[in-house]
Image (cartoon, rainbow, N blue to C red; front, top):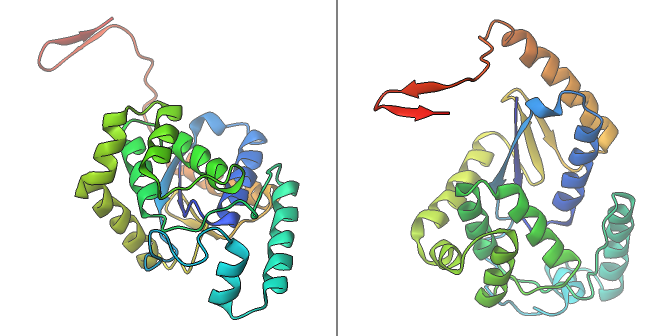
Length: 237
């Protein structure tokens, strides 16, 4: 059964939602039958690569929301507490505001290598915990290397327009499905979870969806793989 997740690596609730899903899956006995696919969703594509208040997320959010600096700090501390409950450590005092397109392009490249989940985790940690600048190509190269991408892979991610098209296509798909924001989880193309629900709540939806999925797929042929040959004389041992 497939779970699709739309997120932005600079969305604090997306990282929390990731941890809560992992907590749900840890309690799910049939988790080996679950496939997770990460999808891109830029919360604000209009943000400049290095915007005003780049090095002060409190001032950036205060200016965007029309609130005081003190209110912005308090609002972020509430999120820090939520993150801590999920086992995460947020350092908003170090978080560097930037446009997230480059990070999404890197994730799209990682997905072609089967490394989408690793890319999400590394980028989330880099932004919220380490305060890395995700607009810096050298930083993205380092992070890509950390998950198994080559320098060439990262360069292609940042220069080949196909990866930007993939980011845009994911966002368009989310809007077609009715997503108003992220995180946005779609389970078996039937159930949607909008927001960072608790692990317990996510587990309930997961169990309901899986029971239906299992019933619908109960007649599928179960194959035990042995030595075979395929068209084109490709043989496996």
